[in-house]
Length: 67
Image 1 (cartoon, rainbow, N blue to C red):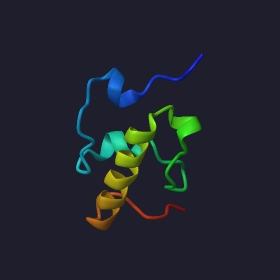
Image 2: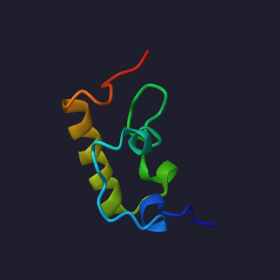
Image 3: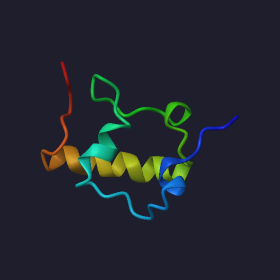
Image 4: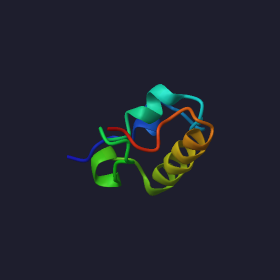
């Protein structure tokens, strides 16, 4: 059974970099971005998620690394 795409399931059209609670769900404890096998996202949404996380990190909303 395939995992459901979180963003398609909740009818989210735009992945916002300011929504850190949702973005943090797709990071592992070391603050690395989880891969598609773990997240269950489509390729398009995975790329958009990565860009949103990177933008959020640049703005200082999410950490680059976590100890």
